[in-house]
Image (cartoon, rainbow, N blue to C red; front, side, top):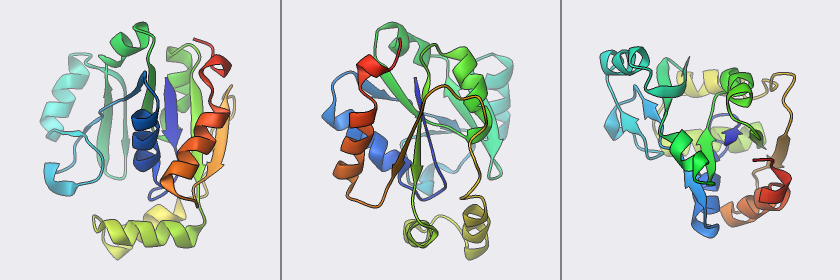
Amino acid sequence: MIGVVGPSGVGKDSVMQALAARHAGVRLVRRVITRDAGAGGENFEAVSADGFEARVLAEAFALHWQAHGLRYGVPVAVNEDLAAGHLCLVNLSRSVLAEAQAMFPGFAVVHLTAPVAVLAARLAARGRESAEVIAARLERAGFALPDGLDRVIRVENTGTVAEVAEAVWTQLQPERVAR
C-alpha cells in the first residue's frame, strides 16, 4: 500500500493515474467520499453522510477520516488487491498515515509538493472551490507529515505528469518496498 499525500492541487490523482497507466500491477484505490458525484476530479464513489456512517458501522472501510468538511473512506476490498500482490496507490490524508502504516505491512508514503503559486493556479483551474476554500486549503499546504513514518518519498510536482510519475517510480521500485 502506497499512500499518496500532498496539499490540495498538487496533482496527486494525475500522478497516480499516470503510474497505474504505465506500470502493470499498480492499482488505484477508489475512495468513498461524501462529495457530490458531479464535483469532478478523481474517480470516487459519492455517498450521503448517512450512507457513509452506515458503512463505518458495517466495518466496510479499511481506513476512514474527515477533512475539508467531507468524509473519506478506503474500502476493505483493498486487502484483496494487496493479497494478490498488487501495488495499491491511494490518496490519503496526513491524519491517517500512522494508522495506515500500522495496518499495511510495507506501507510507504509518496509526498508530492509544489510551490504555493502552482497550487493556487491548479485549485482555481479545477473550479470546485470558492476563493475562500482555496485560501484555506493553501494555508494547510505547508503542514508537515507526522513523525515516525518508515518510508517517505518526496517529489516536487512542477514538471509534466509523465516526468513526475517517472521520478516517483524511480524512487519507489517494488523491490525497495517490503511486501
